[in-house]
Length: 219
View 1 (cartoon, one colour):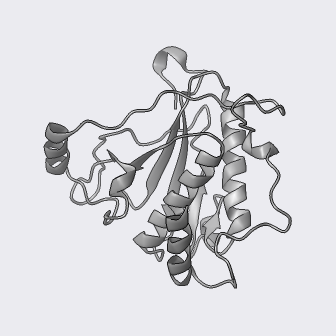
View 2: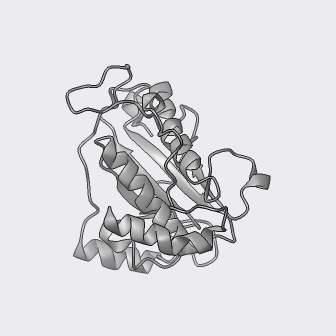
């Protein structure tokens, strides 16, 4: 989350979307789209990465003007908003016992002592999958996030370079800057919270996917 010459100033905010084993990949892709939309509403653009495991990283490049606590608080607010909107689909606590059928929105990567898998890192797993940055337009056709090997990566690198974004700043105070961005922890939630899936009745994640797909398509 920070360069070695500026370790006290995070230059990215990372959301690790970590699905339980019983969550289908289609639900994971919809969660990434949902998170991207919520970040855009705050004026923040994001990048997407397959982790080489079962999850996805959504990363916001930062300008290095915010402290670690500010970045973590901001990410925690976004995660809490998603859980509030769809508690049957998302969880934002580390307890593995409560993750069945849900996607863990891991914002804890945004900590001074935390780590996250690097771009193009080879994972010590069967098939040696690679953590690969991909374009958002590739998300719909994505198979398991562990699908890419070194051979795939080398072929891709010959054709295209990973997308980059300019660093963005989070506003740590309660006053909205010119762009209208407020820190997530200070943004009021709807009362009652507007559900991510209209007609939410506690159905499992797989049953919620068709409605969520329509919601994301409209957005």
